[in-house]
Amino acid sequence: MPNKSWRDYAFAILSVSVCSALCFAMYPRFELTNLVMVYLLGTLAVAARGNRWAAGISSALGVLCFDFFFVPPRFTFTVSDAQYVWTFAVMFTVAMIISHLTIRLQEEAEAARQSEQRTTWLMEKAKKAEVEAETERLRSSLLSSVSHDFRTPLTAIVGSAGTLLGKDEIKKNPVLREQLENIQEEGGRLSRLVQNLLEVTRLESGSLRIRKELYPLEEVIGSALERVERSMPGRPVTVDFPENLPLVPMDAMLVEQVFINLLENGIRHTPAGSGLEVSASADEKAILVTVSDHGAGLKDEELERVFDKFYHDKASPGAGLGLAICRAVVNAHGGRIWATNGPDHGAIFQFTLPRGELSHGK
Amino acid sequence: MENEKVLLVIEDEPAILIFLRSSLEEHGWEVLEARTARIGLDMAAKKKPDAILLDLGLPDKDGLVALKELRKWTSAPVIIISARGQENDKISGLDAGADDYLTKPFGINELLARLRVAMRHSEEKPEDAAPVYDHEGLKVDLIGRHVWLKKKEIHLSPLQYDLLAVLVRNAGRVVSQKQLMKEVWGETRDVTPELVRITVHQLRHKIEPDPVRPRSLKTEPGVGYRLEAES
Image (cartoon, rainbow over all chains, first blue to last red; front, side, top):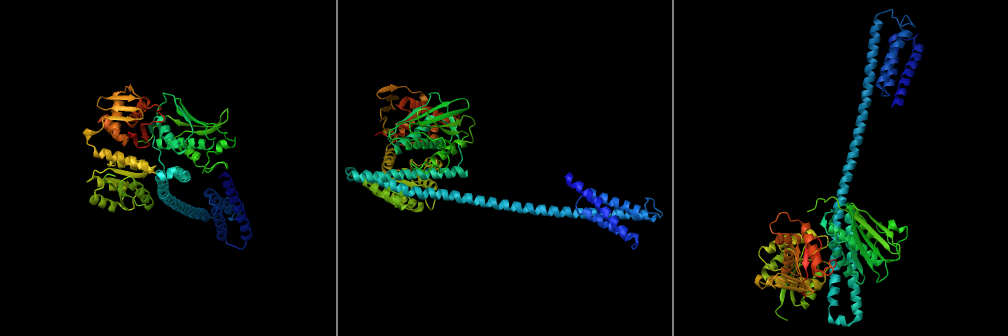
C-alpha cells in the first residue's frame, strides 16, 4: 500500500512539526526534559498508525529537532553539555521501544480479530456442511420412501385392474372394459411419472452414480422400444442403425430412459398414427443418435427451453421432466443433446455419447 | 381343478396382498400370507409351500437376508418382487438363489407366467428336460445341435450355440450376465460382460427376424437375458 505509507511519512513529519511548535510555546516555562515527553507523545501518535518506518523517522526527527531547536546552543546541532548526548540516546531508544510496542499490540489485536473471523467462518462452514449432509440424508430417505409409497398402491391398482380385465364378464361388457383399461393405463402412466420424478431428483442431488460399461446401442434401444410399444402402442417406430456401429460406454439403464423419454415425448406431441425414426452414426470420438418425428415441430424459442425442468407446452399433458432427464443423463455421460426442426416439419432430437473413457464400471 | 398348489406371499402391503390373493386363487393357487420376514420364514418351514413370492422391502428384515436363510433348507422356487432402479438387488437376489424376479408394477399374467416356468424347472429332473425349444418360429434341438428359424436351418458359431443352449435350458427364466459367463465360458478368465453382449447381439442377428424387437431373446435391463417360454 504505497499510498497509505506515503501518508504515514507525511503524518510523521507533520507530527514532529506540531510537537516542535508546541515545544516553542512551552520552552520558557518548562524544563527541557518535559519537551522530550512532547516528542515521545508525537511518536506514539505516529506509531498508532502502524507503520514502523514512519515511527522510526518520527523518533529520529524528534531527537534532531529537540537538539536543534532547544538544546543549548540553540539552532545548531552542536551540544555544549555532553550529558545531552545521553538524553538523545535515551530519548531515541524510548521512542523506538514505544513505537515497537504500540505496533506489536496493534498487530496482535489484528491477528486476534482475523483468527476470530476465521473461526466464525469455519464454524459457519462446518454448520453448513452438517446441514447439507442432513438435507442429503433426508432427501435420499424421502426418495426411497416416496418411491416405495407410490409404487405400492400403483402396483395394486394396475394389478387389480389387470386381473379384472382378464375376466369373461368384463370381456363381454365394453363399458366396464373401457373404464378398467382407463384405470390400468393411467395407473401405468402415473407410475412412469413417479419414476421420472425419482430419477430427476436422484440425478440432481448427485446421488445417482453413473456406471459405464460397453453396450451395443441396439440392445438398449431394444429394451426401450419394448417398454414404449407396450405403454403407447400403435405408433410405427423405425430403427436404422448401421451394421458396424461400435459398442459405446454408457450406463445402459439411464440411456434406455433417454430413449424412452424421447420416444414418449415424440409420440405425445405428434398426430396419432404418425411414425418416428431413430438412427445412429459414429465417428472416432462419439456416437450420434437422432430421434425424429413428423409432428408440427418446435417453435424457435422452444428449441432450448424444452430441456428445462417443468417446461411443457400448455396444449399437451406432461410434467416437463422427460427431456430434463435426457439432458441430465447425456451431460453426465459427457455428451450433448439438442433439438432442431427438420426440413419438412417434425422435430429432431439429437444426442452424442463419447466413445472415450470407460469409467469405474463393474 | 387338480390339487391346489400353495404359494407363500411374504409381503407387508395389504393392497398388494388383496390384488395377489384373489387373482391367484382364481388360477388355482392357495395363497398363504406373511406380513413380515420372520413370520414368512416360520410359515415356509411349517407349511412347506410349493413356491414363495418375496418382497425385498420388508419392515423387519432385509429381503435378501431372508432369502439366504430360506435357501439354507428349501429348494422351493422363490420369485422376488422389486422395483426399477433396484437392479443390484435383483442380481444379488438371483445370486442368493432366487429363481426369478418381478418389477413393480406387474400384472397377474406376468406373475403366473413366472410361476409356471419356476414350477416347471423345479419339478423336472434334468433328464426329462425338453430337448427341443419351439417359439415364434425359432426351433432349437439340443440333442442334434440344430437351430431353425422359420423352418430354415441356421448356423451358429460354437459360442453362439452354447449361449443359446444355456438360455434354452432356462427357457422362460431370467439368466444373469454372471450366470451366462460362468456357464458358457466356464473358468475362462478373460471373459468380459461386453463379450457376452456382443455374442447376444450376433446371435440376435441370426435368430431374430427383427433384432431390434427380439421376440425370443429378450433383454432384462441391468440384469441379463431371458429366452421367452414356449407358448
